[in-house]
Picture (tube, helix red, strand yellow):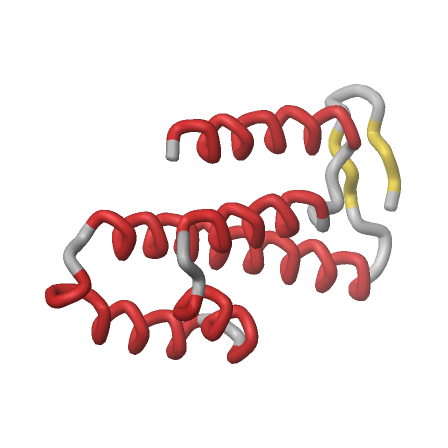
Length: 111
C-alpha cells in the first residue's frame, strides 16, 4: 500500500490489496449493523424480539459470530467488540484508526 502524505490516505497498489480493502470495509459495515442490532435486542423485550433477532443475525453473520451474539448475557458488548476488531483491520493510517477507535470506545461507555 502507498501512503500518500498529502492527504494521509493509503491507496491500494494491487488487485489483492483492493480486495483486502473492500473486505475490510464490508466487514466494518456489517459490524456496525451487528452492534446496532445487538443494542436493539438488548432494549426490546425478548418476547417481541428474540426470534427476529436470532433469525437476522444467523442470516447476516458467520455462524460463530451469530452464536456469540445469541448466547451473550450483554449482546451490545459482543457487537462492540466485533466492531472494534473490524476497525483494527482497516487498512488506514494508525492515527485515523486510533480516532475511530476512540469513537467506538465512547459508544461502549454509553451502554
